[in-house]
Length: 172
Image: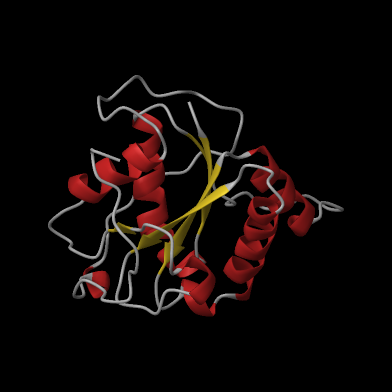
């Protein structure tokens, strides 16, 4: 099963936690940086190491995350690895109407902007990750665990027109 680094703004943690739980229920290993770093731990080193160990970087894109320095740094590391052929694919996940960064514009995105449709984009995302849509048992992993939380209503915006590129389909 694939390992996914979930890049997100801390203000979008509600969505990231829900997505992480859903991905885990399909056997995907998920890494989110929620643990407090210990003294002498380098956050940049921990994040770089987690990205290096991941098959995919799922970038949760919102008004908050596209302005986040940390998210930009995480994506810079992931894109650098991808450009140098080290097999880290960046998958944009759009959760509100925001401008998708140019360097992600040609990538197929998972569009979660419709608050009434979580399962459809989740199915597309699982397909892009190479995971069967049939739920499997939850995989226990040594990485930090995340808790589940509701999606607040302030993110219930219209579908973004900025989500460029084709969506993954069952025929891809």
